[in-house]
Image 1 (cartoon, rainbow, N blue to C red):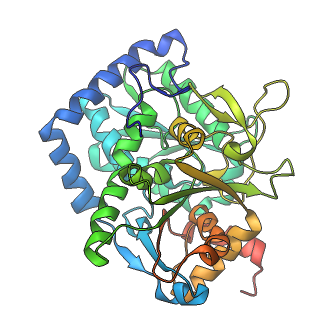
Image 2: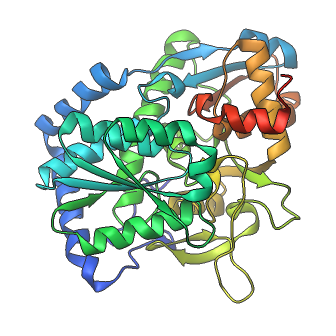
Length: 397
């Protein structure tokens, strides 16, 4: 299994660097700096210090015995990224890129966010590292993620609402890129997922691969063998690729990514780019993309703001085509069922993003054997989504 893109950032036919000339110098500067810090022991020690003492790593591996008993088949474990500082996996990457921005002499970071978790992580890193922070967020997401918007402002970040297009993550990304182009001398664009131009898909994956490395060590210590199944939600795909990466060479492990089917993949209201999309170019990369017959980007939909994106990281597109990872769509309704199931059986309220992975368990678990091990990446906690859950499930809950 191919581990890294080629020198131009291609995972097979996907990835690359489709950018305006004005960003070429910044892209090359970032690529060189990233290659340097990969080999820099001092940088890696500083990153490890912040991951361990600030983010709270390693995150825990928890066996969900009640949920396992409910299905009556294999053993279900959760990689508890929801327990990290700021409430999700997003801080892993934000810390890495924040330290890299300091190395580059940047004084300001810009970020995009949908669910708000990356925005909160970016604002948090800006605080601790002494950087200015501007976060772009669609007005639709601002309305449904009010708690995280307030957190970002408390942390001192400027949250700039985006009113164009779908008013969600895609358009927030567009505005963040425009800002970066205008202020490239003093600004680093802190992308929150494995998307965008090279080197971002590779770089973000490397910063998030701590998830899979820890999981591998923990399951071997607890059970003495590797899992049979890995399961994670996929929007842009950073939690999933960080979780999967350490296991890609283990061909006997079935790896499953779950994307947002919204109201159903037969409708026009979904974000299932790997299931229903076709290769196209967006935000500096070539990847699977939701587009109409004329090649125009379609509006994505998901109950989860973090999965509400019309494309996906190029490495996921490569893994889909290669057959190494299987990708399946899960609807809003099934994600809510997953949310309720974990909440009631284990006392853990997941974010609506990993609730999609939970929503796939009723399809997966009947196929498992009693001694099979299933590990789910619980990429974030659900406090940010309570208002949305309340709206859909009803106040009586």
